[in-house]
Amino acid sequence: MSSEKPRRMNRPPLKKRINGTFVTVVGIIVAALFLAPMFWVTLSSFKTKTEAVQPPLIPWPTQGWALDTYRELNTFGAGLFQHFLNSVAVTFGTVILTILLSSLAGYGFSRFRFRGKNVFFIIIMLTMMIPFQSVLTPLFLILTKMHLQNTLLGLILVYTTLQLPFSVFMMRNSFDAVPIDIEEAARIDGCTTWSLFTRIMLKLTLPGTVTVAIFAFLNAWNEFLAALILLNNTEKQTLPVVAAFVRYGKFGGINWGSVQASVTIMMIPCIILFLVLQRYYVRGLTSGAVK
Amino acid sequence: MSSRSSLSGSTSPAKSAVIREKLKRRYPPKKSEWIALVFIAPSLIMVTVFFLAPLIMDIYMSFFKWPLMGTPKFVGLRNYIRLASDKEFINALIFTGKYTFWVTIAIFAVAFPLALFVEKPMRLTGFFRTSFFLPAVVGFATACILWVWLLNPDMGFFSVVLQRLGIADKPVQFIADYDLAFFAIIVIVVWRMAGFTMLLLLTGIQAIPTEVHEAARIDGATGWQRFRLVTLPLMKRTLALTLIMSITGSILAFDQFYIVTLGGPRKQTMSLVYEVYQKSFISFRLGYGASISVVIMIILIIFTIVQLYILRNKEPLK
Image (cartoon, chains in turn cyan, red):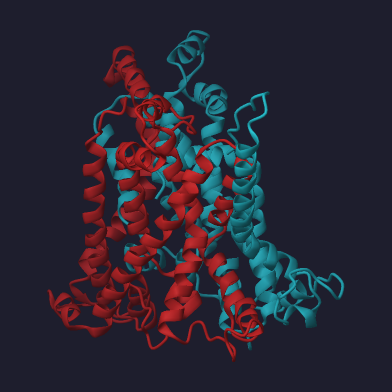
Protein backbone atom coordinates (compact mmCIF):
# COMPACT_ATOMS: atom_id res chain seq x y z
CA MET A 1 0.00 0.00 0.00
CA SER A 2 2.95 2.31 -0.31
CA SER A 3 2.62 4.93 -2.97
CA GLU A 4 5.01 7.63 -1.84
CA LYS A 5 6.09 9.89 -4.60
CA PRO A 6 9.73 10.92 -4.79
CA ARG A 7 10.35 13.86 -2.48
CA ARG A 8 11.17 17.19 -4.01
CA MET A 9 14.72 18.29 -3.32
CA ASN A 10 14.03 21.89 -2.30
CA ARG A 11 12.95 22.10 1.32
CA PRO A 12 9.44 23.41 1.95
CA PRO A 13 9.00 26.54 4.11
CA LEU A 14 9.14 26.23 7.89
CA LYS A 15 5.40 26.67 8.47
CA LYS A 16 4.63 23.85 6.09
CA ARG A 17 7.18 21.59 7.76
CA ILE A 18 5.68 22.17 11.23
CA ASN A 19 2.26 21.45 9.78
CA GLY A 20 3.62 18.24 8.25
CA THR A 21 5.10 17.16 11.56
CA PHE A 22 1.78 17.76 13.29
CA VAL A 23 -0.03 15.61 10.73
CA THR A 24 2.54 12.85 11.14
CA VAL A 25 2.15 12.89 14.94
CA VAL A 26 -1.65 12.67 14.65
CA GLY A 27 -1.22 9.77 12.21
CA ILE A 28 1.09 7.93 14.58
CA ILE A 29 -1.36 8.31 17.47
CA VAL A 30 -4.28 6.99 15.41
CA ALA A 31 -2.15 4.13 14.05
CA ALA A 32 -1.18 3.26 17.63
CA LEU A 33 -4.86 3.09 18.61
CA PHE A 34 -5.52 0.60 15.81
CA LEU A 35 -2.44 -1.50 16.54
CA ALA A 36 -2.58 -1.43 20.36
CA PRO A 37 -5.11 -4.23 20.98
CA MET A 38 -3.07 -6.63 18.82
CA PHE A 39 0.21 -5.71 20.53
CA TRP A 40 -1.42 -5.91 23.93
CA VAL A 41 -2.80 -9.41 23.53
CA THR A 42 0.29 -10.83 21.83
CA LEU A 43 2.69 -9.54 24.49
CA SER A 44 0.37 -10.46 27.36
CA SER A 45 0.14 -14.05 26.15
CA PHE A 46 3.80 -14.50 27.10
CA LYS A 47 3.28 -13.56 30.74
CA THR A 48 3.58 -16.09 33.52
CA LYS A 49 0.50 -17.93 34.73
CA THR A 50 -0.10 -15.58 37.65
CA GLU A 51 0.65 -12.38 35.79
CA ALA A 52 -1.52 -13.32 32.78
CA VAL A 53 -4.70 -13.11 34.85
CA GLN A 54 -3.85 -9.68 36.25
CA PRO A 55 -5.30 -6.57 34.59
CA PRO A 56 -2.96 -5.85 31.65
CA LEU A 57 -2.02 -2.26 32.51
CA ILE A 58 1.46 -3.00 31.26
CA PRO A 59 1.25 -5.11 28.10
CA TRP A 60 4.65 -6.80 28.27
CA PRO A 61 5.63 -9.47 30.82
CA THR A 62 7.27 -8.01 33.92
CA GLN A 63 7.85 -11.28 35.78
CA GLY A 64 9.79 -12.93 32.96
CA TRP A 65 8.64 -14.43 29.68
CA ALA A 66 6.80 -17.75 29.74
CA LEU A 67 4.64 -20.08 27.68
CA ASP A 68 2.26 -20.80 30.57
CA THR A 69 -0.84 -19.51 28.79
CA TYR A 70 -0.19 -21.78 25.82
CA ARG A 71 0.34 -24.76 28.12
CA GLU A 72 -2.96 -24.02 29.82
CA LEU A 73 -4.74 -23.60 26.51
CA ASN A 74 -3.42 -27.04 25.63
CA THR A 75 -5.53 -28.56 28.41
CA PHE A 76 -8.81 -27.44 26.81
CA GLY A 77 -10.90 -29.64 24.54
CA ALA A 78 -8.75 -32.09 22.62
CA GLY A 79 -5.57 -30.11 23.17
CA LEU A 80 -4.14 -27.11 21.38
CA PHE A 81 -2.20 -29.18 18.85
CA GLN A 82 -5.29 -31.11 17.73
CA HIS A 83 -7.38 -27.97 17.21
CA PHE A 84 -4.52 -26.20 15.50
CA LEU A 85 -4.21 -29.21 13.19
CA ASN A 86 -7.97 -29.12 12.49
CA SER A 87 -7.74 -25.47 11.52
CA VAL A 88 -4.66 -26.06 9.36
CA ALA A 89 -6.32 -29.02 7.60
CA VAL A 90 -9.53 -27.10 6.90
CA THR A 91 -7.64 -24.01 5.75
CA PHE A 92 -5.21 -25.76 3.43
CA GLY A 93 -7.91 -28.06 2.11
CA THR A 94 -10.00 -25.02 1.25
CA VAL A 95 -7.08 -23.13 -0.32
CA ILE A 96 -6.01 -26.03 -2.52
CA LEU A 97 -9.50 -26.99 -3.63
CA THR A 98 -10.41 -23.36 -4.30
CA ILE A 99 -7.32 -22.80 -6.45
CA LEU A 100 -7.96 -26.01 -8.38
CA LEU A 101 -11.64 -25.44 -9.07
CA SER A 102 -11.45 -21.72 -9.77
CA SER A 103 -8.49 -22.04 -12.15
CA LEU A 104 -10.34 -24.68 -14.14
CA ALA A 105 -13.57 -22.71 -14.21
CA GLY A 106 -11.81 -19.39 -14.84
CA TYR A 107 -10.06 -20.88 -17.86
CA GLY A 108 -13.30 -22.42 -19.09
CA PHE A 109 -15.17 -19.13 -18.85
CA SER A 110 -12.33 -17.10 -20.33
CA ARG A 111 -11.30 -19.16 -23.31
CA PHE A 112 -14.30 -21.10 -24.58
CA ARG A 113 -17.59 -20.26 -26.12
CA PHE A 114 -20.49 -22.57 -25.49
CA ARG A 115 -24.19 -22.56 -25.04
CA GLY A 116 -25.35 -21.59 -21.55
CA LYS A 117 -22.05 -19.92 -20.67
CA ASN A 118 -23.66 -16.79 -19.25
CA VAL A 119 -26.27 -18.75 -17.35
CA PHE A 120 -23.59 -20.92 -15.73
CA PHE A 121 -21.53 -17.88 -14.84
CA ILE A 122 -24.51 -16.17 -13.22
CA ILE A 123 -25.34 -19.34 -11.28
CA ILE A 124 -21.86 -19.36 -9.77
CA MET A 125 -21.95 -15.62 -9.06
CA LEU A 126 -25.35 -15.99 -7.39
CA THR A 127 -23.62 -17.45 -4.36
CA MET A 128 -22.22 -14.01 -3.72
CA MET A 129 -25.59 -12.26 -3.82
CA ILE A 130 -27.31 -14.50 -1.29
CA PRO A 131 -25.76 -14.83 2.16
CA PHE A 132 -24.71 -18.31 3.21
CA GLN A 133 -26.05 -17.60 6.70
CA SER A 134 -29.54 -17.97 5.28
CA VAL A 135 -28.95 -21.49 3.89
CA LEU A 136 -27.22 -22.95 6.94
CA THR A 137 -30.23 -24.89 8.20
CA PRO A 138 -30.78 -26.98 5.04
CA LEU A 139 -27.02 -27.18 4.48
CA PHE A 140 -26.78 -28.95 7.82
CA LEU A 141 -29.39 -31.51 6.71
CA ILE A 142 -27.81 -32.06 3.29
CA LEU A 143 -24.38 -32.65 4.82
CA THR A 144 -25.94 -35.09 7.29
CA LYS A 145 -27.51 -37.01 4.38
CA MET A 146 -24.14 -37.18 2.63
CA HIS A 147 -22.42 -38.31 5.87
CA LEU A 148 -20.29 -35.17 5.67
CA GLN A 149 -21.77 -33.42 8.69
CA ASN A 150 -19.33 -33.31 11.60
CA THR A 151 -16.37 -33.96 9.26
CA LEU A 152 -13.56 -31.62 8.30
CA LEU A 153 -14.07 -32.60 4.65
CA GLY A 154 -17.65 -31.36 4.79
CA LEU A 155 -16.46 -28.02 6.15
CA ILE A 156 -13.79 -27.80 3.43
CA LEU A 157 -16.42 -28.36 0.73
CA VAL A 158 -18.69 -25.68 2.22
CA TYR A 159 -15.87 -23.13 2.57
CA THR A 160 -14.69 -23.82 -0.97
CA THR A 161 -18.19 -23.27 -2.33
CA LEU A 162 -18.34 -19.93 -0.51
CA GLN A 163 -15.01 -18.90 -2.07
CA LEU A 164 -15.93 -19.92 -5.61
CA PRO A 165 -17.79 -16.85 -6.90
CA PHE A 166 -15.02 -14.41 -6.01
CA SER A 167 -12.31 -16.84 -7.08
CA VAL A 168 -13.85 -17.81 -10.41
CA PHE A 169 -14.43 -14.14 -11.19
CA MET A 170 -10.83 -13.33 -10.28
CA MET A 171 -9.37 -16.22 -12.31
CA ARG A 172 -11.50 -15.48 -15.36
CA ASN A 173 -10.15 -11.94 -15.37
CA SER A 174 -6.60 -13.27 -14.95
CA PHE A 175 -6.98 -15.58 -17.94
CA ASP A 176 -8.59 -12.79 -19.93
CA ALA A 177 -5.43 -10.75 -19.38
CA VAL A 178 -3.21 -13.35 -21.06
CA PRO A 179 -2.84 -12.49 -24.77
CA ILE A 180 -4.39 -15.03 -27.08
CA ASP A 181 -1.30 -14.95 -29.29
CA ILE A 182 0.70 -16.80 -26.62
CA GLU A 183 -1.89 -19.52 -26.65
CA GLU A 184 -1.92 -19.75 -30.42
CA ALA A 185 1.85 -19.98 -30.58
CA ALA A 186 1.75 -22.88 -28.13
CA ARG A 187 -0.96 -24.59 -30.14
CA ILE A 188 1.10 -24.30 -33.30
CA ASP A 189 3.98 -25.90 -31.40
CA GLY A 190 1.67 -28.86 -30.79
CA CYS A 191 0.33 -28.19 -27.29
CA THR A 192 -2.92 -29.94 -26.37
CA THR A 193 -5.61 -28.01 -24.51
CA TRP A 194 -4.69 -29.68 -21.23
CA SER A 195 -0.94 -29.16 -21.40
CA LEU A 196 -1.55 -25.61 -22.58
CA PHE A 197 -3.59 -25.08 -19.43
CA THR A 198 -1.21 -26.72 -16.98
CA ARG A 199 2.12 -25.71 -18.47
CA ILE A 200 1.53 -22.22 -19.76
CA MET A 201 -1.67 -20.63 -18.58
CA LEU A 202 -1.34 -21.50 -14.89
CA LYS A 203 2.11 -19.92 -14.73
CA LEU A 204 0.95 -16.75 -16.42
CA THR A 205 -1.96 -16.31 -14.03
CA LEU A 206 0.05 -16.86 -10.85
CA PRO A 207 -0.71 -13.38 -9.38
CA GLY A 208 -4.44 -14.06 -9.65
CA THR A 209 -3.92 -17.45 -8.03
CA VAL A 210 -2.07 -15.87 -5.10
CA THR A 211 -4.94 -13.42 -4.58
CA VAL A 212 -7.46 -16.25 -4.63
CA ALA A 213 -5.33 -18.24 -2.18
CA ILE A 214 -5.00 -15.38 0.34
CA PHE A 215 -8.74 -14.79 0.49
CA ALA A 216 -9.45 -18.52 0.80
CA PHE A 217 -6.87 -18.78 3.58
CA LEU A 218 -8.15 -15.85 5.63
CA ASN A 219 -11.81 -16.79 5.27
CA ALA A 220 -11.31 -20.46 6.11
CA TRP A 221 -8.90 -19.80 8.97
CA ASN A 222 -11.21 -17.24 10.58
CA GLU A 223 -14.68 -18.61 9.85
CA PHE A 224 -16.84 -19.12 12.91
CA LEU A 225 -20.57 -19.70 12.37
CA ALA A 226 -20.46 -22.59 9.88
CA ALA A 227 -17.84 -24.43 11.95
CA LEU A 228 -19.94 -23.93 15.08
CA ILE A 229 -22.98 -25.47 13.42
CA LEU A 230 -21.53 -28.11 11.10
CA LEU A 231 -19.05 -29.69 13.52
CA ASN A 232 -20.58 -30.95 16.74
CA ASN A 233 -17.73 -32.84 18.35
CA THR A 234 -15.48 -30.52 20.32
CA GLU A 235 -12.38 -32.49 19.30
CA LYS A 236 -13.08 -31.79 15.62
CA GLN A 237 -13.51 -28.05 16.16
CA THR A 238 -11.37 -25.37 14.58
CA LEU A 239 -9.53 -22.75 16.64
CA PRO A 240 -12.07 -19.87 16.55
CA VAL A 241 -14.87 -22.04 17.97
CA VAL A 242 -12.64 -23.56 20.65
CA ALA A 243 -11.43 -20.10 21.59
CA ALA A 244 -15.06 -18.97 21.92
CA PHE A 245 -15.70 -22.00 24.16
CA VAL A 246 -12.76 -20.97 26.34
CA ARG A 247 -14.28 -17.49 26.54
CA TYR A 248 -17.65 -18.99 27.47
CA GLY A 249 -16.02 -20.89 30.29
CA LYS A 250 -17.28 -24.11 28.75
CA PHE A 251 -14.29 -25.97 30.19
CA GLY A 252 -14.61 -24.51 33.70
CA GLY A 253 -14.11 -20.84 34.70
CA ILE A 254 -12.87 -18.36 32.13
CA ASN A 255 -9.10 -18.59 31.89
CA TRP A 256 -7.98 -15.19 30.55
CA GLY A 257 -4.44 -16.42 29.93
CA SER A 258 -5.74 -19.07 27.54
CA VAL A 259 -7.93 -16.47 25.86
CA GLN A 260 -4.82 -14.37 25.13
CA ALA A 261 -2.93 -17.38 23.80
CA SER A 262 -5.76 -18.48 21.53
CA VAL A 263 -6.26 -14.99 20.09
CA THR A 264 -2.52 -14.70 19.42
CA ILE A 265 -2.35 -18.06 17.65
CA MET A 266 -5.30 -17.19 15.42
CA MET A 267 -4.14 -13.66 14.68
CA ILE A 268 -0.44 -13.96 13.91
CA PRO A 269 -0.67 -16.14 10.74
CA CYS A 270 -3.17 -13.69 9.20
CA ILE A 271 -1.00 -10.67 9.98
CA ILE A 272 2.15 -12.27 8.59
CA LEU A 273 0.36 -13.45 5.46
CA PHE A 274 -1.07 -10.00 4.89
CA LEU A 275 2.19 -8.13 5.46
CA VAL A 276 4.06 -10.41 3.05
CA LEU A 277 1.43 -10.50 0.31
CA GLN A 278 -0.53 -7.28 0.81
CA ARG A 279 -0.15 -6.25 -2.83
CA TYR A 280 -2.17 -9.29 -3.89
CA TYR A 281 -4.71 -8.81 -1.15
CA VAL A 282 -5.41 -5.20 -2.07
CA ARG A 283 -5.69 -6.21 -5.71
CA GLY A 284 -8.41 -8.67 -4.83
CA LEU A 285 -10.21 -6.20 -2.65
CA THR A 286 -10.28 -3.46 -5.24
CA SER A 287 -11.44 -5.70 -8.06
CA GLY A 288 -14.82 -5.14 -6.50
CA ALA A 289 -15.94 -8.68 -6.02
CA VAL A 290 -15.49 -9.06 -2.30
CA LYS A 291 -18.49 -9.54 -0.15
CA MET B 1 -14.72 -0.91 -9.37
CA SER B 2 -11.87 -2.50 -11.27
CA SER B 3 -11.85 -0.01 -14.10
CA ARG B 4 -11.50 2.94 -11.75
CA SER B 5 -9.01 1.79 -9.24
CA SER B 6 -5.40 2.74 -9.54
CA LEU B 7 -4.33 0.16 -6.96
CA SER B 8 -5.82 -2.64 -8.94
CA GLY B 9 -3.82 -4.55 -11.49
CA SER B 10 -6.67 -6.55 -12.98
CA THR B 11 -7.91 -6.27 -16.52
CA SER B 12 -10.35 -3.57 -17.33
CA PRO B 13 -13.77 -4.65 -18.58
CA ALA B 14 -13.05 -2.91 -21.87
CA LYS B 15 -9.94 -5.02 -22.42
CA SER B 16 -11.79 -8.19 -21.46
CA ALA B 17 -14.47 -7.34 -23.97
CA VAL B 18 -11.88 -6.96 -26.72
CA ILE B 19 -10.41 -10.35 -25.86
CA ARG B 20 -13.82 -11.96 -25.84
CA GLU B 21 -14.52 -10.37 -29.22
CA LYS B 22 -11.31 -11.89 -30.55
CA LEU B 23 -12.31 -15.27 -29.15
CA LYS B 24 -15.63 -15.13 -30.94
CA ARG B 25 -13.80 -14.90 -34.21
CA ARG B 26 -11.11 -17.45 -33.54
CA TYR B 27 -12.94 -20.29 -31.83
CA PRO B 28 -16.07 -21.52 -33.51
CA PRO B 29 -18.58 -22.44 -30.79
CA LYS B 30 -19.33 -26.03 -31.72
CA LYS B 31 -15.77 -27.26 -31.72
CA SER B 32 -14.93 -26.35 -28.12
CA GLU B 33 -18.25 -26.87 -26.41
CA TRP B 34 -17.78 -30.18 -24.60
CA ILE B 35 -14.28 -29.55 -23.32
CA ALA B 36 -15.32 -26.26 -21.70
CA LEU B 37 -17.83 -28.15 -19.60
CA VAL B 38 -15.03 -30.33 -18.27
CA PHE B 39 -13.35 -27.20 -16.94
CA ILE B 40 -16.49 -25.69 -15.49
CA ALA B 41 -18.31 -28.78 -14.21
CA PRO B 42 -16.49 -29.16 -10.84
CA SER B 43 -17.33 -25.62 -9.75
CA LEU B 44 -20.85 -25.91 -11.06
CA ILE B 45 -21.46 -29.17 -9.17
CA MET B 46 -20.14 -27.70 -5.93
CA VAL B 47 -22.33 -24.62 -6.20
CA THR B 48 -25.35 -26.73 -7.07
CA VAL B 49 -24.93 -29.22 -4.22
CA PHE B 50 -23.77 -26.89 -1.47
CA PHE B 51 -25.59 -23.72 -2.41
CA LEU B 52 -28.44 -24.00 -4.89
CA ALA B 53 -29.89 -27.14 -3.34
CA PRO B 54 -29.88 -25.70 0.22
CA LEU B 55 -31.32 -22.46 -1.15
CA ILE B 56 -34.31 -24.21 -2.69
CA MET B 57 -34.64 -26.51 0.29
CA ASP B 58 -34.64 -23.52 2.62
CA ILE B 59 -37.70 -22.08 0.93
CA TYR B 60 -39.34 -25.52 0.88
CA MET B 61 -38.61 -26.13 4.58
CA SER B 62 -40.13 -22.82 5.60
CA PHE B 63 -43.59 -24.27 4.79
CA PHE B 64 -43.10 -27.20 7.17
CA LYS B 65 -42.99 -27.93 10.83
CA TRP B 66 -39.61 -29.63 10.68
CA PRO B 67 -38.16 -31.23 13.81
CA LEU B 68 -34.61 -32.62 13.87
CA MET B 69 -35.96 -36.14 14.38
CA GLY B 70 -39.28 -37.43 13.04
CA THR B 71 -41.27 -36.53 9.96
CA PRO B 72 -41.79 -32.97 8.79
CA LYS B 73 -45.39 -31.79 8.64
CA PHE B 74 -46.69 -29.39 6.01
CA VAL B 75 -48.10 -26.28 7.65
CA GLY B 76 -48.48 -23.92 4.72
CA LEU B 77 -47.84 -20.30 5.62
CA ARG B 78 -48.23 -20.85 9.35
CA ASN B 79 -44.53 -20.26 10.09
CA TYR B 80 -44.70 -16.86 8.43
CA ILE B 81 -47.97 -15.98 10.14
CA ARG B 82 -46.43 -16.83 13.46
CA LEU B 83 -43.37 -14.69 12.69
CA ALA B 84 -45.60 -11.64 12.42
CA SER B 85 -46.57 -11.98 16.08
CA ASP B 86 -43.35 -13.52 17.42
CA LYS B 87 -41.99 -10.95 19.88
CA GLU B 88 -38.46 -12.40 19.80
CA PHE B 89 -38.32 -12.25 16.02
CA ILE B 90 -39.72 -8.72 15.88
CA ASN B 91 -37.24 -7.59 18.53
CA ALA B 92 -34.40 -9.17 16.55
CA LEU B 93 -35.61 -7.45 13.39
CA ILE B 94 -35.77 -4.05 15.10
CA PHE B 95 -32.47 -4.57 16.89
CA THR B 96 -30.68 -5.63 13.68
CA GLY B 97 -32.04 -2.53 11.93
CA LYS B 98 -30.92 -0.29 14.75
CA TYR B 99 -27.50 -1.90 14.89
CA THR B 100 -27.06 -1.66 11.11
CA PHE B 101 -27.99 2.03 11.16
CA TRP B 102 -25.61 3.07 13.94
CA VAL B 103 -22.68 0.85 13.05
CA THR B 104 -22.72 2.00 9.42
CA ILE B 105 -22.71 5.64 10.50
CA ALA B 106 -19.90 4.96 12.96
CA ILE B 107 -17.78 3.06 10.42
CA PHE B 108 -18.11 5.81 7.83
CA ALA B 109 -17.51 8.56 10.38
CA VAL B 110 -14.11 6.96 11.05
CA ALA B 111 -13.29 5.48 7.64
CA PHE B 112 -13.92 8.60 5.56
CA PRO B 113 -11.52 10.88 7.47
CA LEU B 114 -8.96 8.05 7.45
CA ALA B 115 -9.29 7.67 3.67
CA LEU B 116 -8.82 11.42 3.14
CA PHE B 117 -5.90 11.33 5.58
CA VAL B 118 -3.93 8.60 3.81
CA GLU B 119 -4.88 9.72 0.32
CA LYS B 120 -2.10 12.25 -0.11
CA PRO B 121 1.41 10.86 -0.19
CA MET B 122 3.34 12.10 2.86
CA ARG B 123 5.77 10.80 5.42
CA LEU B 124 4.78 7.28 6.59
CA THR B 125 1.69 7.02 4.35
CA GLY B 126 2.36 3.34 3.68
CA PHE B 127 2.76 2.64 7.39
CA PHE B 128 -0.47 4.49 8.21
CA ARG B 129 -2.50 2.62 5.59
CA THR B 130 -1.20 -0.74 6.73
CA SER B 131 -1.79 0.06 10.43
CA PHE B 132 -5.35 1.25 9.91
CA PHE B 133 -6.11 -1.76 7.75
CA LEU B 134 -4.42 -4.47 9.82
CA PRO B 135 -7.36 -5.23 12.18
CA ALA B 136 -9.37 -6.17 9.08
CA VAL B 137 -7.26 -9.28 8.44
CA VAL B 138 -7.88 -10.53 11.97
CA GLY B 139 -10.90 -12.81 12.00
CA PHE B 140 -14.16 -11.32 13.22
CA ALA B 141 -14.55 -13.99 15.89
CA THR B 142 -10.91 -13.54 16.91
CA ALA B 143 -11.38 -9.78 17.21
CA CYS B 144 -14.46 -10.32 19.37
CA ILE B 145 -12.65 -12.69 21.72
CA LEU B 146 -9.74 -10.24 21.97
CA TRP B 147 -12.13 -7.45 23.00
CA VAL B 148 -13.99 -9.65 25.46
CA TRP B 149 -10.68 -9.93 27.28
CA LEU B 150 -10.02 -6.18 27.12
CA LEU B 151 -13.56 -5.40 28.30
CA ASN B 152 -14.00 -7.93 31.10
CA PRO B 153 -14.90 -6.19 34.37
CA ASP B 154 -12.31 -7.69 36.74
CA MET B 155 -9.15 -8.48 34.75
CA GLY B 156 -9.80 -6.34 31.70
CA PHE B 157 -7.90 -3.26 30.63
CA PHE B 158 -10.71 -0.72 30.32
CA SER B 159 -12.55 -1.48 33.53
CA VAL B 160 -9.39 -1.18 35.60
CA VAL B 161 -8.17 1.96 33.84
CA LEU B 162 -11.55 3.65 34.34
CA GLN B 163 -11.39 2.79 38.02
CA ARG B 164 -7.81 4.02 38.43
CA LEU B 165 -8.73 7.28 36.73
CA GLY B 166 -11.61 7.69 39.16
CA ILE B 167 -14.23 7.67 36.39
CA ALA B 168 -15.77 4.46 37.72
CA ASP B 169 -15.93 3.50 41.38
CA LYS B 170 -16.51 -0.22 40.84
CA PRO B 171 -15.69 -2.78 38.09
CA VAL B 172 -17.42 -1.74 34.86
CA GLN B 173 -19.83 -4.43 33.61
CA PHE B 174 -19.66 -3.59 29.91
CA ILE B 175 -22.06 -6.28 28.79
CA ALA B 176 -24.53 -6.13 31.67
CA ASP B 177 -25.98 -2.82 30.55
CA TYR B 178 -27.69 -2.51 27.16
CA ASP B 179 -26.32 0.93 26.23
CA LEU B 180 -22.77 0.09 27.31
CA ALA B 181 -22.92 -3.26 25.50
CA PHE B 182 -24.22 -1.61 22.34
CA PHE B 183 -21.49 1.00 22.51
CA ALA B 184 -18.83 -1.65 23.11
CA ILE B 185 -19.99 -3.64 20.08
CA ILE B 186 -19.86 -0.51 17.90
CA VAL B 187 -16.30 0.19 19.06
CA ILE B 188 -15.23 -3.40 18.30
CA VAL B 189 -16.79 -3.40 14.84
CA VAL B 190 -15.39 0.03 13.97
CA TRP B 191 -11.93 -1.11 15.05
CA ARG B 192 -12.27 -4.21 12.87
CA MET B 193 -13.96 -2.63 9.82
CA ALA B 194 -12.85 1.02 9.55
CA GLY B 195 -9.59 0.22 7.74
CA PHE B 196 -11.35 -2.08 5.33
CA THR B 197 -13.92 0.58 4.44
CA MET B 198 -11.14 3.17 4.27
CA LEU B 199 -9.35 1.16 1.60
CA LEU B 200 -12.48 0.82 -0.52
CA LEU B 201 -13.19 4.56 -0.24
CA LEU B 202 -9.55 5.28 -1.05
CA THR B 203 -9.81 3.55 -4.41
CA GLY B 204 -12.78 5.77 -5.21
CA ILE B 205 -10.95 8.94 -4.18
CA GLN B 206 -7.86 8.00 -6.15
CA ALA B 207 -9.88 7.33 -9.27
CA ILE B 208 -10.78 11.02 -9.47
CA PRO B 209 -8.42 12.62 -12.00
CA THR B 210 -6.06 15.17 -10.39
CA GLU B 211 -6.83 17.66 -13.16
CA VAL B 212 -10.36 18.05 -11.78
CA HIS B 213 -8.94 19.09 -8.41
CA GLU B 214 -6.40 21.37 -10.04
CA ALA B 215 -9.14 23.08 -12.03
CA ALA B 216 -11.23 23.57 -8.92
CA ARG B 217 -8.24 25.02 -7.07
CA ILE B 218 -7.48 27.45 -9.88
CA ASP B 219 -11.13 28.52 -9.77
CA GLY B 220 -10.55 29.41 -6.13
CA ALA B 221 -12.39 26.59 -4.37
CA THR B 222 -11.44 26.05 -0.72
CA GLY B 223 -10.51 22.63 0.64
CA TRP B 224 -13.98 22.03 2.05
CA GLN B 225 -15.64 23.20 -1.18
CA ARG B 226 -13.41 20.88 -3.22
CA PHE B 227 -14.39 17.97 -0.97
CA ARG B 228 -18.09 18.74 -1.07
CA LEU B 229 -18.43 19.76 -4.70
CA VAL B 230 -15.74 17.69 -6.42
CA THR B 231 -14.68 14.67 -4.35
CA LEU B 232 -18.09 13.60 -3.01
CA PRO B 233 -20.10 13.79 -6.26
CA LEU B 234 -17.36 12.07 -8.28
CA MET B 235 -17.12 9.11 -5.92
CA LYS B 236 -20.86 8.63 -5.58
CA ARG B 237 -20.64 5.15 -7.03
CA THR B 238 -17.88 3.94 -4.73
CA LEU B 239 -19.67 5.53 -1.81
CA ALA B 240 -22.94 3.81 -2.60
CA LEU B 241 -21.32 0.41 -3.08
CA THR B 242 -19.26 0.65 0.09
CA LEU B 243 -22.37 1.73 1.97
CA ILE B 244 -24.34 -1.25 0.71
CA MET B 245 -21.51 -3.62 1.57
CA SER B 246 -21.46 -2.25 5.09
CA ILE B 247 -25.25 -2.49 5.41
CA THR B 248 -25.55 -6.06 4.12
CA GLY B 249 -22.61 -7.14 6.29
CA SER B 250 -24.24 -5.62 9.37
CA ILE B 251 -27.62 -7.24 8.71
CA LEU B 252 -25.83 -10.62 8.84
CA ALA B 253 -24.04 -9.87 12.12
CA PHE B 254 -23.71 -12.84 14.44
CA ASP B 255 -20.21 -13.36 15.89
CA GLN B 256 -20.13 -10.17 17.96
CA PHE B 257 -23.45 -10.93 19.65
CA TYR B 258 -22.80 -14.62 20.15
CA ILE B 259 -19.29 -14.08 21.50
CA VAL B 260 -19.28 -10.67 23.19
CA THR B 261 -22.77 -10.00 24.57
CA LEU B 262 -24.15 -13.57 24.47
CA GLY B 263 -27.34 -11.99 23.10
CA GLY B 264 -27.85 -10.17 26.37
CA PRO B 265 -28.54 -8.36 28.54
CA ARG B 266 -32.03 -9.85 28.70
CA LYS B 267 -31.91 -11.03 25.07
CA GLN B 268 -31.74 -7.41 23.94
CA THR B 269 -28.87 -7.94 21.52
CA MET B 270 -30.22 -10.88 19.54
CA SER B 271 -29.63 -10.29 15.82
CA LEU B 272 -31.58 -11.96 13.01
CA VAL B 273 -28.88 -14.55 12.27
CA TYR B 274 -28.66 -15.25 16.00
CA GLU B 275 -32.44 -15.92 15.94
CA VAL B 276 -31.96 -18.42 13.10
CA TYR B 277 -29.20 -20.13 15.06
CA GLN B 278 -31.31 -20.18 18.20
CA LYS B 279 -34.46 -21.52 16.52
CA SER B 280 -32.74 -24.06 14.24
CA PHE B 281 -29.87 -25.39 16.30
CA ILE B 282 -30.81 -24.80 19.93
CA SER B 283 -34.60 -25.35 19.82
CA PHE B 284 -34.34 -27.58 16.71
CA ARG B 285 -37.35 -25.96 15.05
CA LEU B 286 -35.75 -26.21 11.63
CA GLY B 287 -38.81 -25.15 9.61
CA TYR B 288 -39.33 -22.05 11.71
CA GLY B 289 -35.63 -21.20 11.49
CA ALA B 290 -35.81 -21.59 7.72
CA SER B 291 -38.68 -19.10 7.53
CA ILE B 292 -36.54 -16.49 9.33
CA SER B 293 -33.74 -17.29 6.84
CA VAL B 294 -36.11 -16.59 3.97
CA VAL B 295 -36.98 -13.20 5.49
CA ILE B 296 -33.27 -12.34 5.79
CA MET B 297 -32.77 -13.47 2.22
CA ILE B 298 -35.55 -11.24 0.93
CA ILE B 299 -34.14 -8.22 2.77
CA LEU B 300 -30.71 -8.83 1.29
CA ILE B 301 -32.02 -9.48 -2.21
CA ILE B 302 -33.64 -6.04 -2.07
CA PHE B 303 -30.27 -4.49 -1.23
CA THR B 304 -28.58 -6.53 -3.96
CA ILE B 305 -31.08 -5.24 -6.51
CA VAL B 306 -30.29 -1.69 -5.40
CA GLN B 307 -26.60 -2.51 -5.77
CA LEU B 308 -27.05 -3.91 -9.28
CA TYR B 309 -29.09 -0.85 -10.19
CA ILE B 310 -26.23 1.41 -9.07
CA LEU B 311 -23.69 -0.71 -10.94
CA ARG B 312 -25.72 -0.50 -14.13
CA ASN B 313 -25.87 3.29 -14.16
CA LYS B 314 -22.20 3.83 -14.83
CA GLU B 315 -21.73 7.54 -14.76
CA PRO B 316 -19.15 8.93 -17.15
CA LEU B 317 -15.92 9.36 -15.23
CA LYS B 318 -13.54 11.15 -17.52
